[in-house]
Amino acid sequence: MLAIVGTIPDRDFPIIAEQVTMEGHVINVQGNMVPVNRGTAALMAAAIKTCEVLEQPSPFGYLVGDIGVGHGSRRLYKLLTEDLPQRDFTTIAFHYMLPYVNRQNEVLLAIEKMARRPILIADAGYMYVAKMSGQALKYDLFTPDIGELAFLTDETVPHPIYTRGFILHKEEEVPELISRAYANNNAARYLLVKGCVDYVANREGIVSTIDSPMVDAMEPIGGTGDILTGITAALIDSGIDISQASIIAAKVNRLAGHYAMPTPATQVIEIIEKIPRALTDIINTEPLFESYPEQTR
Amino acid sequence: MPFFDFLKDKKTKAPDITSSDRGMLVFENTSEVIRAESVLKANGYDIRVMGPPPEIRSGCDLVIEFPILEQLTIVRILSDAKIPPLQVVPVNSPLLKPVDLFHVKDFGQYLMVRAANMKLTIDKNSLIIVNISGGGCPDVPYLAAEMVGKSLSEAPSPREIGHTLCGYTLQLAYEEMRRLCSL
Image (cartoon, rainbow over all chains, first blue to last red):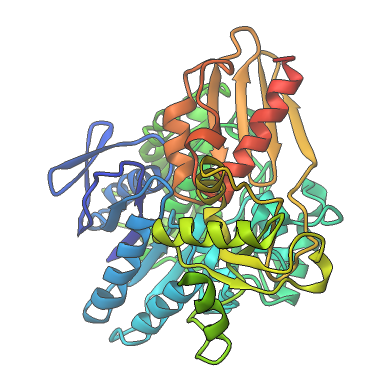
């Protein structure tokens, strides 16, 4: 089962470890309704939609309210440290959390106590802390955008805001930035770099680039990166290998964006609604899915 | 007394912290350091007083080490207490400066400004903030919920309601957007 770890931007949202479902445009966790706009809620919604099409169980959520003060994040690190050794997740996607290096190290130790090691995906704040701790190599997939890739590349900085000016945040620099991130051991086993062109890479180099359909208006829309991570996590958890899942997810995300016909003012839920159609279309054309059950195809 | 605790710390075990997620607050004088230490400890922050590295020995000879991702809240608390720091720098690389390069993208009716990992987009006609994207700290979804749908002149600024370095980065994009819109 896929587990998703993250925060909800509501200071009163309780700490929860439970399977998540979706009702209309809202995530339902133990009766707590979470609107889907961006952040971890968007990642969960995209993963749920993907799991529905793949006929996989709905993801498990480790969630807590946090508006950036860190109280919720600290409680969630503690819960993970205590709870994970008893669990049997196949994939864990870590997302919006306030980065605390030592607490992240404790969670990694807890993961080592699990009966089998899950595939570890880190995005957003958890990717920052994974890099800051020097533990990037313990993770299987990071999903940075270009600004975050520059941060991964710069070995000295604690946050993207301090990324040094000579490390250019330009699309044409992405292959070089990927090489530097791996040279400094600041990248996970795989990278899915989100941008005008999406890159799937590992230490050996670029595995694939995905650039169509090109939907220029997706760049300013908050949450499009989150939903790409959510689709990828669900595909990986269904048994598809990490690089293939990343490539398929990038295609699905773009196709869903294309179907939504967005403007820069579009909200991400409008794209999430198109994920089932986009994924079904990809399943029907992608040779990888030929062995899938007919009803899914 | 907190200040003398710092002196005792030299003989005791170092706190269980790493430098990669820490920053330093630099003040005008030692008196401000002592007051700031008291204020931050009273607010429950994991901080310690220490000597500054050679690169930043421009203020007093003590600095406060703090969790750098929580910069926005901590600076706001100190400003409210009328002891704003002179400088905030990362522990590992105190000469690093926040990003000052902005990427501006014109979508016709819409304008996007990106600062490092944060993007803010407005409708050029109404100056309404239509989207906020990027970032990884938990205040980003909160800031987006509070700011999207409001005009640049009416929306709360990230400096007022944000808490983290992502919030601070969004503040830079917000200020650049206001400058571009002549606000």
